[in-house]
Figure 1: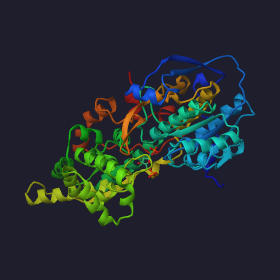
Figure 2 (figure 1 turned 135 degrees about the vertical axis):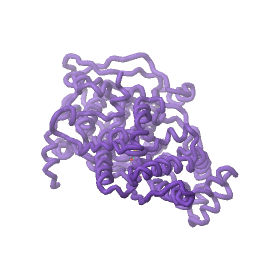
Figure 3 (figure 1 turned 90 degrees about the vertical axis):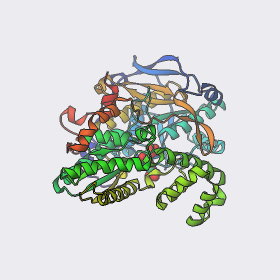
Length: 547
Ligand code: FBP
């Protein structure tokens, strides 16, 4: 494999580990835990993995460790740092016992079920240290939830003499990790399952998980690109740039990028929902700012749009709920229809209120909402061209205002969608260190006989030395939610909190960013240089963790 000069140099970076993980480790157990909601339901569904204590790793004298073999799976969307979780797993396993083996299941959870795997060796891991991407073993979105899949997986687990499976994934994949852990525990198969918090979306966080890995690098990469666009925009002064940002339902990515780059407008889906705004309210808000800037001679600007926006406009949200149930219950007879017939089918089956919302949406958007859900039942929001929908509607509103003599500017819009540009970027020092520490923690959970836990690393705004590592029972983060028309136990997704520090900071400053041109150009991620540039965390984390 030919590698770039940067990759070659970066391979030599030794991720920094918290003091607590540098030598031999023992665990300190806390009080028993309970789920964030629906405790009776979750306890009933997870009798073997419910109520376990939080654990923290603390230094100890050298201990003996039995030999263990571990299988690792990368699940869902790519996030910078995944290869470092695997490097951390590998190094710690070999440190505990050189006979330990690490297997990588290929192309996601499907690799376990279909028995596709490789053994991860020292030479192999060396090529991927501190690199972005999941190409080391590939990733996939197969949902592990059927007993037949668990049993099929067990065959290869037995064949390779594997003691534990590590699933590196987002909220849905870790929910499945918990279901698998419970199943193997109930059957007394002696196979442990450990999760790791991954997703660029930043929506897998709570009192125990400060951030999911990949959010740091992805938002820094997008912010670099947004900064470049802002500088171009402020040089030519003739375009309005509409930039959609990945992030699924939550607006964490858009909000973090706004805090880093100070655009003229950033929409936050959670606020739109809380204020019960309509699509027209959003359009008038944006058009109002454009008209205000035009009156000052500034016919240019930058607008950030979270990709999940459409689901959060309350009327559209209600429509999606009904469509989810409709698609889940009528999936088979609906699937083979032509698009026009699908539209007709939906219109005849929807309730009156939702039908009129469906009819008012541009056909392309309505069609996207009627397509298959991903394996976890989510609308594939990254496929909906919200940035174009909004800029076109804003254009129409401005044209109407022009006729009415309320606006006299020039409006020319350009569109961008940033998602794939950042998901596989070379991990920042933060993600490189954080992921490596997560891998080491996962091995320590395994060595200490834990199952149904997620590896965690806390105190991440302090210097790496002071980070705290341990594990959280996955059931602690669960509640019951409707998925594919049924109530299911799932890890609660963390959306942007309107009373949280990052949103408050943004809300206090956005009016001046709208009126004035206060762009900030963050530039590229730096890997070598002063720590306050290279090891700096996201603004979200700094604001959330500020005491
Ligand atoms: P995960 O939730 O699996 O981490 O995925 C993150 C994400 O990048 C979302 O931001 C985006 O909506 C989705 O993946 C797109 O996935 P795909 O490329 O599989 O369509």
